[in-house]
Length: 142
Image 1: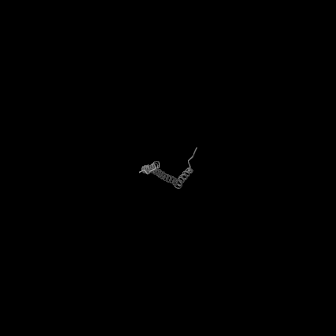
Image 2: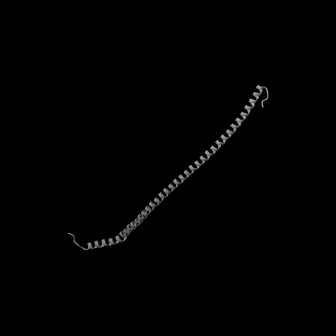
Image 3: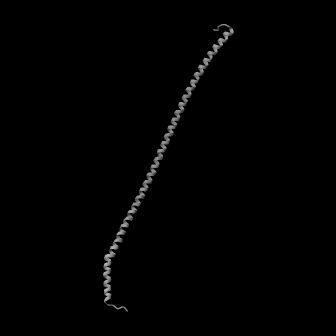
């Protein structure tokens, strides 16, 4: 059986002294460090969440800006292509008109030359006919 004597009081007193010392020197600072660590990690977690949210927002803004720039680029490209088509059609119309004028001028020149050639051929034929008639008749024809 266990007998109660003064050593139990010494052990209880030693336990209380060690408990008090350990609480003061070890447990409270350690618990304080744990609480500080939790506070900091909680703050960092909150900051990380805020940064993640900000990153998501910036990503959406970036994607919107890229989409807008692509749309503007497509619109500009379409405008340039349309302008080029109109310029091409305008140039083709001018070239056709110029070619038509040149063709008409060439036809007129050919008609003039043909007329001159006919007139010349007619005069020469008349002169040759006159010469032949004079040779055949032996006199000058009028």
